[in-house]
Amino acid sequence: MLKRVTFNNRVLPYLLVFPQIAITLVFFIWPASQALWQSMLREDPFGLRTTFVGFQNFRRLFSSPIYLEVLQTTAFFSIAVAVLSMTVALLLAVMADRVVRGALAYRTLVIWPYAVAPAVAGVLFLFMFQPTVGVVAFWMDALGLDWNFRTNGDQAMVLVVLAAAWKQISYNFLFFLAGLQAIPKSLIEAAAIDGAGPARRFWTIVFPLLSPTTFFLLVINVVYAFFDTFGIIHAVTDGGPARATTTLVYKVFTDGFIAQDLGGSAAQSVVLMVIVISLTVIQFRYLERRVHY
Image (tube, rainbow, N blue to C red; front, side):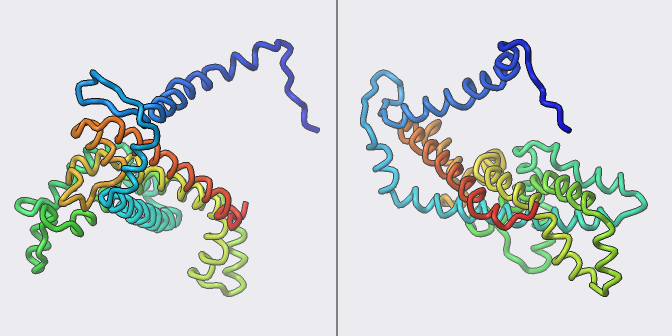
């Protein structure tokens, strides 16, 4: 029989949740409301005059072919990063789950990249793939591959996707490994006795039982690709060449801090927030039905 927890002091529950409510209001609700209000204003670069323009910033935004191009780029970038990072992390987690000797060292080495800051991860890949002095670029040149991400937009996109996925693999690896270790070994052993091979055991038993973990990581990776990859793109390509790697969050930066279009930048941040919230709701509303708890 479960014993229900009660508070004799009516003020105590509110005091316990007050810190979290205060943090949410100060760092989430207040900035979001400020961005929504600023998206309806037009300010000069010096902040001397402000004009209320309503939804004019949003109309100008969606009538711009450049913004629609950036939207498509962001969609491809986020899908590529999520799929690549989760696939590699799942493969490494399956391998780590089978390691007996040196398992701790193997897992530690795989987790290390998560401690690297996004900008540092971008610089590492920038040095390795630098067309003139990069080690990987030297190998590709020896193989006869023409590599120069400074002038080739597709190659620049591949580079930032690799850097962003590499940064996120460790995070995904931790959760996949924990999910694998939580699966009862008796189920896998019973399937092996029935004659199921390793591949069939994985797709019919292991992967369905990992669906809660996979669903959670899918949401996290989409949010990561939309927001936390700014440092990588800024360090590696600056959104170029020719906006080939400019994502929504990077365009918010360039329009707001470089072009000084504060109203337009605020409107873009509101649209970005709505997109991420909508994707999260869709994932929980429709994809969660396929999750087996």
